[in-house]
Image 1: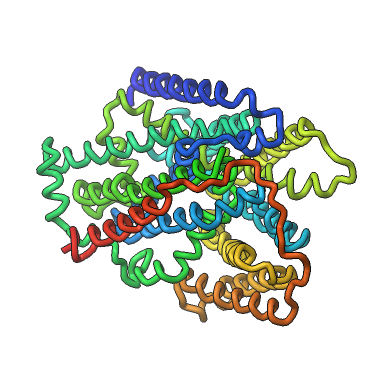
Image 2: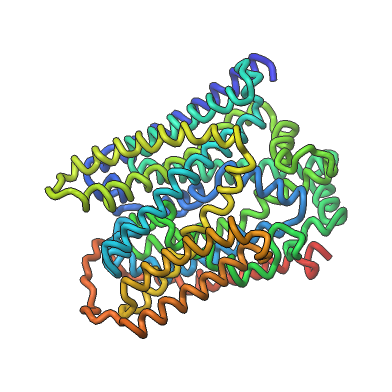
Length: 535
């Protein structure tokens, strides 16, 4: 890339990002002084902003690189993480969200405190904060920075070593992302997410169209014909045991993992808790489900196209999407692409940062104080906490480069330490009031010990796919709660207060929309199977 081209890319990127920042600031400037305003966007988010924020919170550079790389190196089986998530969005819209909004909760640990006791709240906060602070937030910064470095060759441009380029990129992405979370609160995060989400869809469609055109020597129709006729096995989503996501896992641990992520993970559900009404929340959550069904077309088909264009010769499957971008996107689009790529990374980073600060302030700091705090003081503490967490993540993220094998292994397995016990006690807590707090505590303690032993001590003995292992532990923990309920049922009052702050009238089209979404999930799987395109 020449000097003038680089300047054009950087300037156009900066212009687009400045425009997004201005719009986000205008939308959120009056809502960051109050507690509900800062943490929950004034409980005034509409369906479109909820869907846009959910989309960008979930999709980042890791998905752009990883999903396309998986399709390039294997097949479409990894789409399971995206497509089946639509079922979990239905569960969130129809089951979880009405109960969350009825209780007017700001955080999931607050719900657990209300349903069980303060100790269960503390246990869950510890799990979330360790997961977010030590693994999830740094890994988002690291993977986003690696994507930018691979596509734009930052070390060469800046005259730095690869590690130096990584550190510089981490700092730029982290500082800009932190500004949204620290000074704008959730509303700024949601607005910027929605704009960048639209940009991500545009970029995905553009890369898909240009890839098909290149595959057909300038004719998209010919390219589509070649995509469908050459190597049809690449279009198969029915994975076997040698694929990253065997088909059987869809019916065991995949369900549970997606339920945790979409229904109980604080940094994902926080924007749904900010809905101005149940109807708007259901619209936003279900709309995000439709976006998840589209992900294979925008974030995996380009990887298959890369296999047709380059063959199996790339040194790493993760180079498939960066190579496509470098070869296909015209220079006048690269600035917009860089802005969208950074926006996707910002989204996951600032959402995590905002949620981590929310958890710390509302579930740790405020309950520990003996004197009440004003809303302005609460917001100020949250801003300080966001800065501290951000700085800590700047330090941890580059370390992933220095010891990638060990730390990447921790990243892959760490979520398993807290996702299964959290979703288990939340589901039971929603549907029965008789399960005692001691049952929830036993489940959390048992899971952390058992999962740690299975992954670190008996890893060579237990050969189950980790998603099947999720299902086994989930069943054991449900049994533990059932035994606790039978032996020591909760005898306190079962009637819960009804402090809801928003209209709880359901969206009249929620059920037919959910049925349509289920039909689309099944249809996409039939399409990418030996019954469809993989014939």
